[in-house]
Length: 169
Image 1 (spheres, helix red, strand yellow):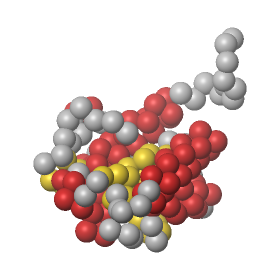
Image 2 (cartoon, helix red, strand yellow):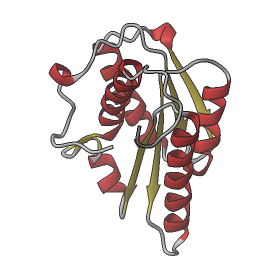
Image 3 (cartoon, rainbow, N blue to C red):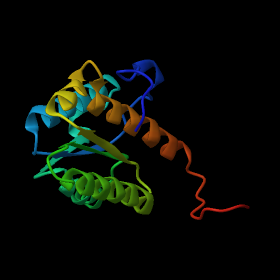
Image 4 (cartoon, rainbow, N blue to C red):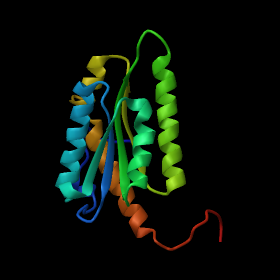
C-alpha cells in the first residue's frame, strides 16, 4: 500500500457497490487499530460498498492477521481482504520479527489466493507516530488500505481473461 496523499481521493476509486470486502483487524493497540478500521469502513462506504458486503474479523494481534485474512478468504468469496494492525518499536527487536512475518504472510496469501490482500499495518517507533498515521497529520492508513483494496479488486475483476498461468504467450 502506498499513497501520494494523506487520504485517498474518491475521484480515483472504482464503484464498490458490487464488491465484497473482508477486514482482519488486530485487537492489540486498539487506540490505533479502531481508528484504522473506522477509516477503512468510511472509504468503503463512500465508494458504495454496503455494510452487508463488509465482513470484519478481530484477531488478537498483528502476527495473527495473515491467519485472519485466510479465514475471510476461505469462508466466502471476497474481492479483497484488508489487514489492519499496529506494531510499535519496543526495547527489543521483537517488532522487527513481527512486522517481517506479517508482511511476508500477507504477501504470500495474496499471491497464492489470487485475491488482493492489503497490508494496512502501521509500523512506527513511537505510539505518537502511530496515532499520527491513524487519522492524524499523516492521514489514516486504514483509509489508504481500503482505497488500495478497491483499486486492486477492480483490476482483478476487469482482468478475467481466463488465463491461469504467468508467462509469455
